[in-house]
Image (cartoon, rainbow, N blue to C red):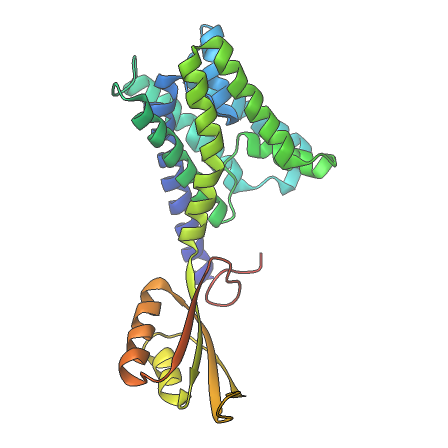
Length: 285
């Protein structure tokens, strides 16, 4: 029970941090520049240009409407994390709009602002995805489509984002539209790269003559485990041992240095991997 409480506290702390990053990136960099590269915030930018309502207010209305749709269509399957994220982002944008209004862009460098408008929300999305949470907004549409239709969700959401971006070209000037297209193309790349770096681990294949000291170091100093099996060198036909283990990046440096100084004849292959699933790393669910 104590472990579950700690895990819940950690997850909701990370969700809150992710929401703050998204709200900051959208309010300070996306809304003032009219960048419209998809999602509910992209819709809000477009609709705020053709209605008297502000982008923050429209974002709030759309998110609340999507929450109602989510509850109606998904029922109990509709996660509490999605509700928490949607409400937090909507209230956060409304609060910033009230207390820190942005009448114009923060700087005169639209490229610089586009970078932050992409990176901060993308980092937020990566954090949410990594802990199994939904960012609300168009993610709710994806959840509904997944349950009630056979539509290719990725393609459907991309087409929606593309239509929002195209609309920016007609509603705003060509520069804003082109910046929005750049944002649309870069968003997924940044999210994927961030997720990969968050989960990055080092996979060791170690071929050695004396595995016990290495395994003891892995167990006692790094508090990790390993798999070991016997092998035979094809040239000398001498008996060898192969150790397989996975480490976080900081631990990987320690293990590499230990082997380098204590068994310099050992053969190491170190591979990057961001998909390690199992005890001590990511769960199956």
